[in-house]
Length: 340
Ligand SMILES: [Zn+2]
Ligand SMILES: [Zn+2]
Image 1 (cartoon, protein in one colour):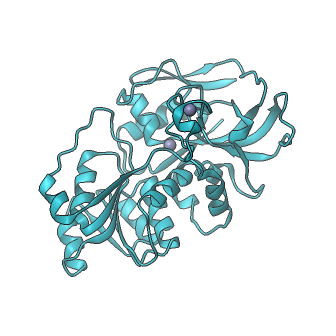
Image 2 (spheres, protein in one colour):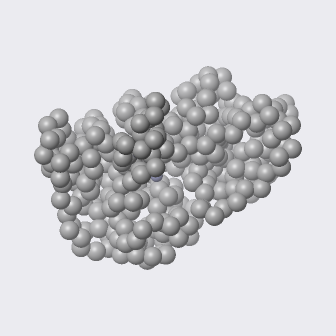
């Protein structure tokens, strides 16, 4: 099969690779689409060290090609997505009451084991979820990021009526804007540096957009909220700078969600006095435990606009070019999806 193999920093090659062989309890998926995530870019830039060579890709959809022994409940040819995180089932976290993906031995498809920038990928059957046949592969590939967003919004205890600032209007920010509105947010601010993304943010439901390259987002949000700030500030970039902005735009007694994945060695500068004075609650979010089923439902409800988030659908062979485009932070790129 054809696959994109990452060998080192900015060294991604299209190669022939063996089709994965499924064993007990596993499923072989013929990949329909796989989105490029900020996490994949971290691997590509060497900002998050993973074992190489690796076929990345964890945001994927496809059809069941083959089921391994013991998998009786999945039919071949159904359209599916898969939770990429494979937990061990025997560590402290897996066995504690709130069984969670804090699993000490977690292995994720496209991170620790080969992923879906390929024609085929294998996963445990228990990680597989059927999606409606009418849903496009491109849109279904956004279910993994939706599942992660649901985890974050649950963690930050979003409530109906909350005002929200989303710092960063990339694919995650654009999902967060829609999800918070769906969840009952009364006003959503979007902050970004790129005009095209802010136009999308407005189209997808942001009530007010702030271009941080032209105006100070803290001043803009405070002046619009009678000096109060927002109930919930969501960082959706993966940078310490964006977290600092989120902390500043939150109201006294507000909640901050640190959501974006920052480079491994990024360091945050915070004034502890600001945390004290505002009595801020800061939440983080790790992957997508127990949110996949709901993410499938949310996507299937058609209440999110997913297609507008996808700026490029490219063949797998264009993968190295696509990574280069995202690495250069080219403004036209929002979500880039590859199709084998
Ligand atoms: Zn991702
Ligand atoms: Zn475990």
